[in-house]
View (spheres, rainbow, N blue to C red):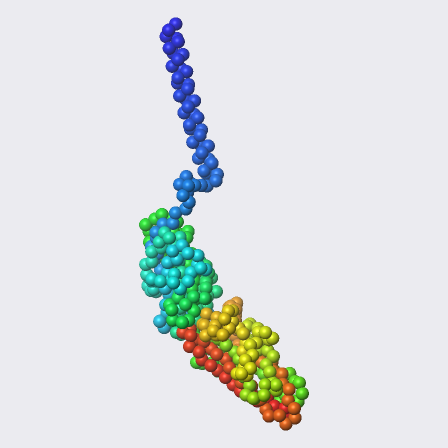
Length: 355
């Protein structure tokens, strides 16, 4: 009788232990399933994702935009900077210090946890080549955005600054060094080869008359290009009521300026095409805002690139001559800007008369 009661008590105790074990196991299973369904690791549920320190080995190649042949550059500079967690669009000149220049053969750069995987790089292809940023972005998946409003190296000229996104790599906890090679898509400068032609003088007649003059930037070289910084027209008469410029059209897909897009300076007797994004008075000397004009014998589907050997500048003129008026000299100026900011000015004069 007593043995039976003792056995019954043991059985109840064992059953209670088994129930407790099943309860704990079931709770752990439910918790695990909850984590799996919502994909939130226990650590990250409380402290969020962690960015790890990582060393990258950067190298680069410089190639022709047109045929991917090697480009022979002069004193290029590709300099990488930490962002320290600051938004790329909020970076200022004071944030971009202590950069490391990247060599074509490879240079190590350590991404710090505070960078959160985002770096910034100044891109300069040297004095003889321009960087085609759109095609360069297509060729480099890590290069995701660009800015043109910061003088990174403090030389008085705005620079091309690009955003490098390595956030997915920086979240991987590993001691392996990661190699990455940039491919910069460049085109050689044609400045020094091109010139402006000389159209014939133009008889406008008397009264209110409209006409056009087409100047051409000629002798463009295949697989090269240049950038236009400024286009303007002047007249030489003391009287400013005999002629005016009504439009300025720039070929290779850059469109036409008229009305408020033309800035007239009375004292200088000058009409300037406003082809800039920001400060009209200053930005004409910035390479980063220059209008690209490229020539290629093959259709590459690239904006502002054509097969023709000249770029037309078409100027609309309105004159108000009376019989016997002195003729007006209309002079076109085209300022080309080199990769290093050097301005080369082309010009030609056409005579407008009342004949």
